[in-house]
Length: 258
Image (cartoon, rainbow, N blue to C red):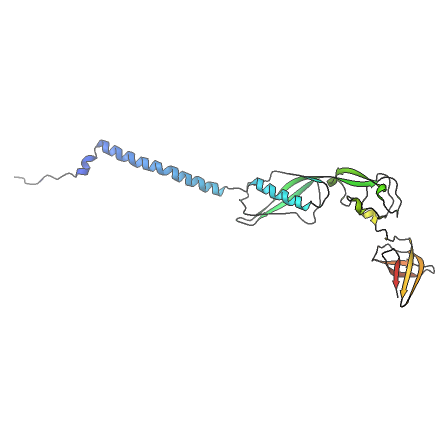
């Protein structure tokens, strides 16, 4: 007689009917699907961090602000139009450092450099179109060499100052009371290289020599062999042909110390 007792089946195993197995599999699938969006979001955030770029508006604004500061000394209405900067390969920058190569040459098209030190070092350049609406001065009538300028000798004209030579006179006070180094035709632009101090002595000009000694002073006349302004050394030929060196004084005389 077989007295072997029948094996007992665990109670939980009875729960895993066909329907139970299906539910278990379904639950595992749902858990896996719930984890996928989290992983997807993490990958997306990582990709965004890798492909983050410098804000082009901030880059352009920094370059324009710097350029306006550098050109603020020019009298007139300054207009700057920045080209869209190229930022495809530029990482976001904590602090931007604009610069312009020295010396600054004002042109209709200018380039502003921008450096970034951190978190990733890079340098780029932004192009700008520049114009300055202002006024300059021309001769109101024919002016002779050596003539002392008055306000009535000049007429104001309007123009884009960027298109004019860099030494054009923009401030009338720079010209009044100055002496012309060369003659000017009517309508000719006044430039700073044609202005001399009223006390400026030109070569061939008759000058007064003042010889200063201990307890005496002697005056005579001569002709300038060179040109010079107040405080500068000059050579003068006197009547006997001798050439004497001296210093141009504040009143246009030539001081000759002994």
